[in-house]
Image (cartoon, rainbow over all chains, first blue to last red; front, side, top):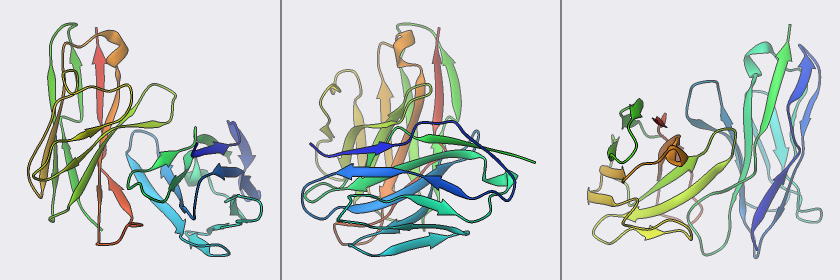
Length: 112
Length: 116
């Protein structure tokens, strides 16, 4: 079936460290891929997206590249800040469906 | 983008009662979705609500337990009926903008429900 697998958290980093959160997917056709972020006590916000192979989504210093050959969409940031502490969800919309399929979420904790 | 207002933001309810959650959007949208986020878990789709038609429920969710209304293009409600402690979750509505199949979804802030 169609699914998203994320690395388990929590991920704890020091400020200005490099961040990678791994995300792989299983889907028929050519899904659209997304990263959503959930700050404490808030709803989900779209962080970035990519709709076809080799697309790179970017926002607020975060990047992710749609890799069809490895069915991956890893989230990266070169230098994290304390304000980046949140839960990050990888998600997809697969062909023939309009709703999102989410991964399990990865909690990021950035320490000063 | 869209501004999505959910009410209530949180509630504490007694077992056996029902709660209706409202979702208001500041623009007309075709598709609205309701998700559940159980404590420490990811989001699971409850149903898709299109204006003018019956909601489409995911496996494991039934209309008697989670009735949904979609009276117009800017509003929807989700009712959690005959609640039990297992219904304690965050309930989120989202909307899809645009006219193609791969559009962006925007989420409300969610309703945090605790059932005693």
